[in-house]
Length: 121
Image (cartoon, rainbow, N blue to C red):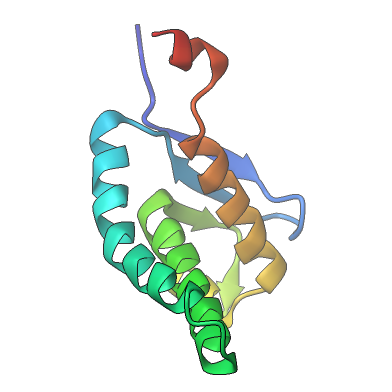
């Protein structure tokens, strides 16, 4: 049996672009959880605050979490140049089309979910 630890998606948002996402594994789930844990603690603290500053901080934290998902889960981007350079996860986050960023984030989050077959095991 040949197993690939990643899956490549063709973008529905940006013509000619594809991106590669890690498939979830036990080690991957652990690594990602460690990255998100500290950020999540800050989010809970500010969620309890209720004032405008706390609400703004929660929005920033949510974007930090999304960035962590993207940096962890997207391993490559093909078919996109940003300012004359081949796109990377970092350049898409900072300078790329936001709709592509959202699409990649959705793909990473989809890989985080266990399928019905995986839940049975």
